[in-house]
Image (cartoon, rainbow, N blue to C red; front, side):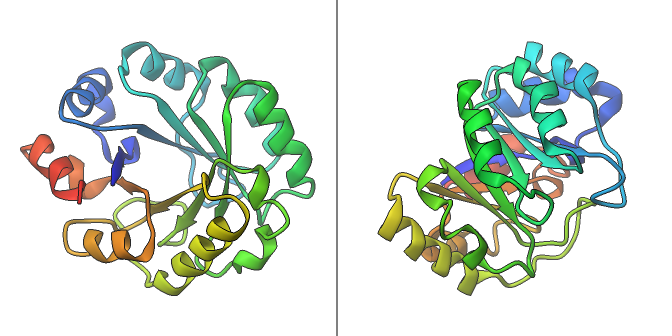
Length: 212
C-alpha cells in the first residue's frame, strides 16, 4: 500500500516543517486538496502555497481538484509538475478532453468519484486513466468518518482488471489503521490519510501502520 498524507490536516502555521516531516517519515506521495468554495463548501489553498510545497517536498505531489472550471485549475497547477492531477467526474462535462490535456502536460490523469457516484460513469474512460480516486467521505472537510464503499472499490477493481490493469485505485476519507487491511483486500493501491497521520506524535509509525 502506498501512503499519501493529506496536508489538509497539517499545521499550516509551520507547513514547511510538516511537509519535510512526512516526507522523511515514509510518505510515498503528498496529497494536496484544492477546494474553490463552489464545488464544495470550503476553500483551501491556491498556487502560491502549492508552489511552496513543491519546493520543499521530496516526494511527488498528488493534486486533488474539488473545483468548478477544472480546465482553468489544471492549467494553474500543472506547472508544479505533480505526479497526479485528479478531477471530479460529477463536475466535468468533457472528461475525455480534460484527461488528454493533463497527459499533454506529462502528468498522470485521475478521476474522482464521490461516495454516491456510480462507477458506471467512468466505464468508457478507465482505459485512459492512471488512477481512480474513490471518496470515502463527502468531500469538503477533513476528519470525517469513513463511509463503507467496499463494494464500489471491488467494482472499480474489476473495471481496471478488464480494461486497464495498470490503473491504480486510491481511497480518501477516514482512512486509518482499523480499516486499512480491508481496503487492501478490496483492491486499494494508495491510501490517503490526513487527520490519522497528522494527529500522531510519531508520524513515521502512523504511516508504517498503513503500509499493509
